Image (cartoon, rainbow, N blue to C red):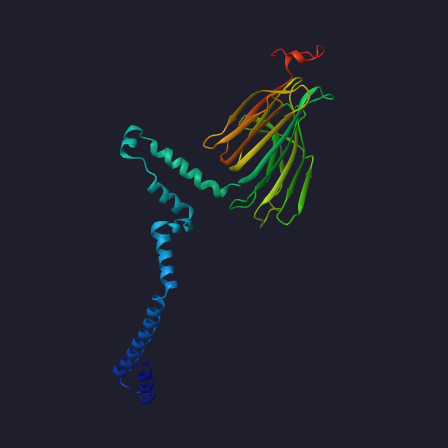
Amino acid sequence: MLLTTIILDIQFSTPSLHIAIRIGIRALESIGLAIIIAAIFSFASGTSAFVEKIRTLLEDIIVKRNFLANIDKEGKKEALKSLIQPTFSEANKYPNIGNYYGHFISKTLEISEKSVRSNYQITCRAYFDETKGKIAVEGIYTYRVYPSVNGFKNIIVGFQEPNGTGSYCSYVSVSDPNGERKYFGNPELEASDEGGDKSMRATIPIKDFGDRKNHLDVELSVTEYGTDHWALIKFQALQPTDGFRFNLRCDGELKVREHAIFVVGAKYYLDVSDCNKNLMVSCNQWINEGTGLCILVSIPHEQLSSSTPLPDAA
């Protein structure tokens, strides 16, 4: 057919050719091309590679529904709302149960707007500081942080001590995947009041340093002070975190007196030594904001020096 159209074009190349003949030649040419393309497609469709490719595409769409991963945030939210709905019996019992589902759908999809962390490790040493006459807790915090859709957020270092008990941050060290490091020594703390939550805080600018980098490794050295014979050690995750490990060692006469761990929806493991001098908490799953722990360390009353007066509340 294609050869015929070529011959006809050569034979009838005059401009005065009847329009019906021109249409017929073009139609014959189109049919010839369509037959050739169909023949090639039929040959390709018979190969095992083509069949496997089609099977994979159908499996992704129909079975695995992988196409949902590529839709935008609002599309995902609507897809989840259509899938995660309360049953009629639940809706009749709890009229606002739909808001509960919607709340967690929104919280889940907000993960892309947050900087998440992994490999979070905290190593602490509690001891009595002779120079200050208080219990001191030295901690090294290390973790890897990943950017959100808007890049990295600046690091906030602070203490919930509006009156200032002398706690401080020795340094913050930030390293990129290329091994380059930025060091912030003795960041200056300033008073902060957000809705009644008074604290001392410092902002560590890492947004520009982490520009176009897929992760940063952070290390902080922090020293917190308690009173003359007890200290309350607190940790709370302010970002979604892929697991954490907390280690505490008590020096001298200090011992772990009480502890409380707040982990919801994840398994954790607690190990306390027989002498109550060492404590370890480990969790190998994702934890949400608000997860944390609280540990009270103190010098037993019977071991306190008679020259060290106890607070009235003791």
